[in-house]
Length: 120
Image (cartoon, rainbow, N blue to C red):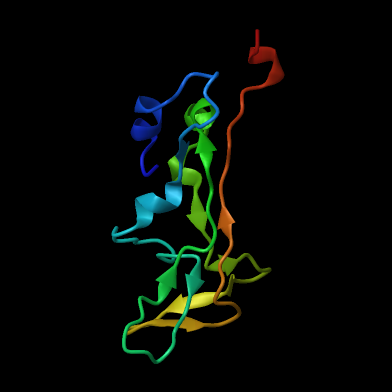
């Protein structure tokens, strides 16, 4: 589902086999992304219809982990750290994006699970 609220609202009993999952990549669909790429795979082909950016990689978060999944720490990486400066995988240009290393970008996210001492 596209929001944490929808997952919480539609959470099913534990006896039910089907459940709902939050997909943070959906939050990016149709949004202006100021930091990073708008997708995980950039496909630049000369075709009549090409949307360029696709979402190949996904993260699905179950109802019981929503409180431990900070949206602010979900990122699509466009560069990797280097000794002096980052190595860009892809760069935004005036018209499109320029592939430097890869058209398939990794994702990075955190799940802040409570320590074992916090459990009953």
